[in-house]
Each structure stands twice: as structure tokens, then as C-alpha cells.
Image (cartoon, rainbow, N blue to C red; front, side, top):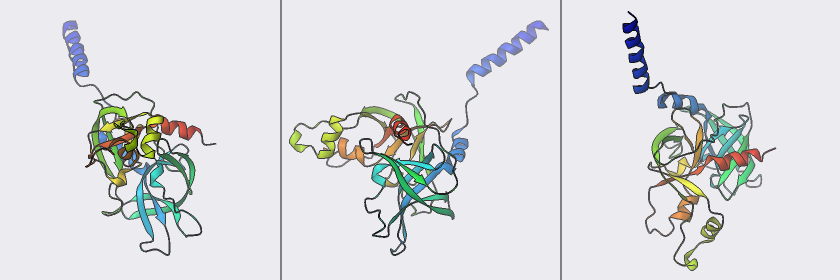
Length: 253
């Protein structure tokens, strides 16, 4: 009897090794993080259409802050030209528009944090984990804005490379101002083997098991600094490490 019990427990132990209990599956994680994914845009009651989707953002911190890319925020926001910065909360046909203001900007890493009006929303956690090449992550956002309705879309891919944000040119004469700045303040970004679209700018890149954010999709800054030497820029997707967002968030008082 004791032998049978020993064999039984040994068998259970081997099963636990072969099939470890994992955290939430990707479908569960997507369901958990979707309420934190919002669209960023503008509203002008005199324009047609009155609203425009410019990119993606996600809720962080106290539930009233939104993280996104700095380039997503248009330069023409002012009371004079009647253009308001807004966020669109909710999905499908159940959409709520809220006013937003700029809380902090990091031009070097193309990051911005907005403050939004209204009741707090569920924030995502910014991860401090070490990211390694070959690890699988997911990102959720609005790749083509509201063309197909305001429904967040999820993609996944591995970290194919951790690479410098800018590639040196053979001659400084061919470098743009943005390239020179990027080379002077060089840092590393994540390269993913998944295709993102302009509307994905500002999307969170997160652990498919925990939903914790490790990076922010960037479809503009890295392309201009890293791929300007290519006559046909690639479909490679880049992301800014979350540690820079964490630092920017800490600067808000």
C-alpha cells in the first residue's frame, strides 16, 4: 500500500514538472487588459468628421493617466482653433469621449502621459522585468483607427532583437536632425517579429500571462532614426522599453 502511495505521489510530481500550472492564458489576459486600452484623438465640433483617431493609449498609475507616444499628440491643440485633445473610452458602439490634457512628455523616448477627466479606469502595471530576445509578448491597440469600429486588436510576436534606436550613417552629411539627436542620446529598443500599423502607436506590449507592460509600440520615431537609409522601410515593429515610461510617470507630481 505504501509503495502504491509513493508511486502515486511520484507520478503526480512528474506531471507537475511536465505540465506546470501557468498564469492566465492569453485570452484571459486580453479580457483583463481591454478595459485599459483607449483611443487617443481630437474633437472639433466645426470639422467634418468632428472626431479623429490618432493612436492608442493605455491607462496607468492612478487610473486617470494615459500613456502613449509623444508623436500621437497633434501640435494644433488650442482653444483658438477649437481643436480639443480627447480620449475615447469603451469599445464597439459603447464609446465615451473624455477631455484630456498633457501631463508629461519625454521627447527623447517619444513618450507622453495624459491626464483624463472622469472616474478612474483600471490601470495596467508597468513591469520592471528583464526582457530577453526570443520571449513572446502581445500588444493590443487600434491599428487602423476607427475604420472598422473602435474595437481593439491584439497581435503577438517575439522579441527578435534588442537593438540601438539609431543606425549610424556612413557620412554625417546624410544624417537628419532626429538621427543626430538619437545617436547622441542613444538607447536600446525592442524589435518584434510582428506587424503593427500607424494606429498601434502607443499600444502596450505586455506579458501574455500577467498583462504587465514591458514596452510601448512606436511606429514613427524609430523608423525615422533607424531605417532612414532604406529606400523601402521595412514592416518591422519597434517598441520603447517600459523603464522610460516608468521614469516619466515618476516625474509627475
